[in-house]
Image 1 (cartoon, helix red, strand yellow):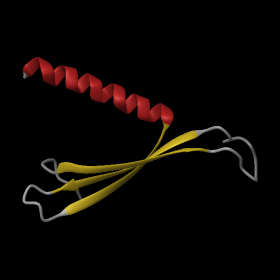
Image 2: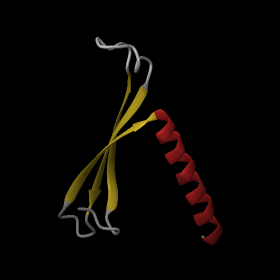
Image 3: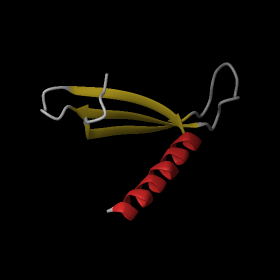
Image 4: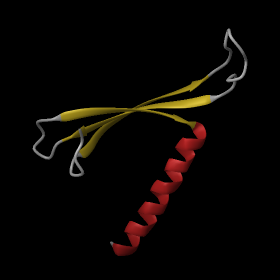
Length: 77
């Protein structure tokens, strides 16, 4: 379990596009982003890997939210 005061220390990512499926072509051309966030406790003793899988649309929505948060933080800096 992660706590709010943990720091992000590493980020691994992979991008995948589904080209074909033996059962159907319903998902052909769909894109996914696989992320692994690694966080560390403030004292540096505990590390936690957090795996995430998101669609391209979800990734762009996340980026948009992060950009909005950064702009709001810049106002108070």
